[in-house]
Image (cartoon, rainbow over all chains, first blue to last red; front, side, top):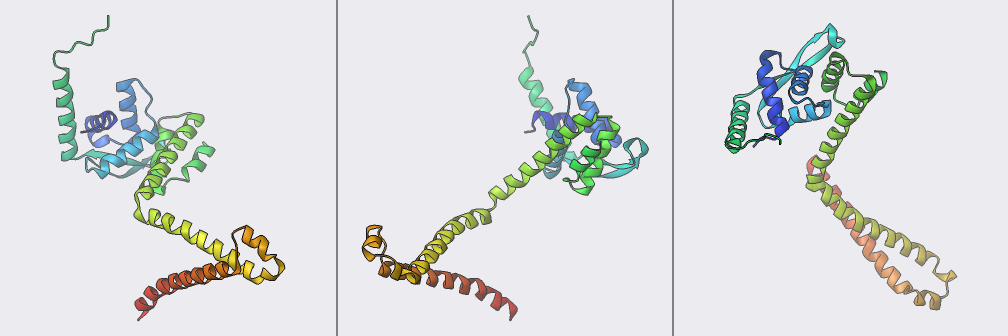
Length: 103
Length: 130
């Protein structure tokens, strides 16, 4: 079973598609959660997901707005999509009939 | 950003490029960039320590090193005691639980064990060189 942050990272990478890389994923997670996403958490989680075979990463091209530095591109693997789907379904199932309205 | 570049030297070259590029692209302020880099370096170091903690060779080394240090320490003490035995009062040494016979016995055992370890350690290398 995925962890919460692992799921967020996989979902952000899947949403970004071919333009998924470190900074873009970070911005996507920060926009979705409204919380800061540290580089340390992002890169160590990426390594873990890659070791589990849930994502593939490779070095992408360098751009001037990055100071001419290369990107670490990310692609969600079929296994990663499966795991994310299983996590999402579990959250949906466990949330059925529960109302989180704050009184 | 200069300090951040210095901190990033503790990362692998490929990761360093990607991380510094991300920090520049996201326009992270220098102070926060340094904190984030320190966090990443700490996580990487923790992962290395965690991996070596699981390594059996580390535990083997720890369990061998402490008895070996104790053995060498006793052997050195006994060698010194035997050399300088004539300067001490045997009665005083006996009060401290020390005697020339015991020291000689311990020293012989110590040297025998050290010699055995050296022979065993070098025997493998000699076989490999044939």
